[in-house]
Length: 165
Image 1 (cartoon, helix red, strand yellow):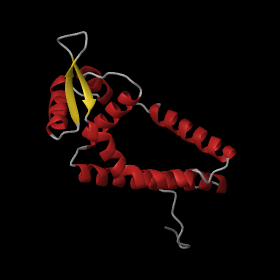
Image 2 (spheres, rainbow, N blue to C red; image 1 turned 45 degrees about the vertical axis):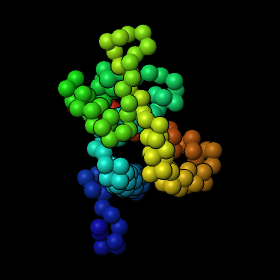
Image 3 (cartoon, one colour; image 1 turned 180 degrees about the vertical axis):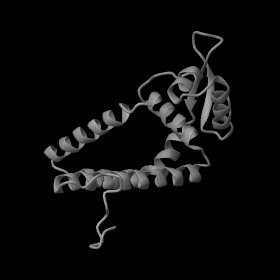
C-alpha cells in the first residue's frame, strides 16, 4: 500500500494512470481468484475430496448432462493423469460413493464411469447458494457490460494459455 492506503501495482509498473487502471483490474482479478480458490478448498473439505477428485466429478457430471459416456482413459487425458493415477482416483470416487463403474455397452473390455445418483444433488447442495449469489451479481450487468466482461475474460484466458511452459 502507498501513503494514501491504495494498493501498489504489485509487480506492474505504474507509468501512467491508464496503466494504474489496468493494475486495478488485475488486482481485482487476483482477489477474485483467491476467493474462488478458498471456496473450492471449503467445498473439497466438506465433500471429503481432493482438487483432482472434484474436477473429475465435475467433468463426469457435465458429460452425463450432455449424454456422453466417459471411460477412464478419456478422464485421464482430460485431467492429465497417468493410467495408475486415474485408477487410484476412480477407486477413491467409487469407494466414497460419488462414481460408479459400468460395463461398456459394446466393448466388454471397457468401462463407463458415471456419477452416482446423489453426486449431482450433493454438488448442487454444496455450491447452490454460492452459485445463486454469483448469478445475482452477474444479473446486475447490462447486456453491453456482460459482453465486455466476457470478451475481457476470454482474452485474459488466451493470454494465460499462450504462456510458455
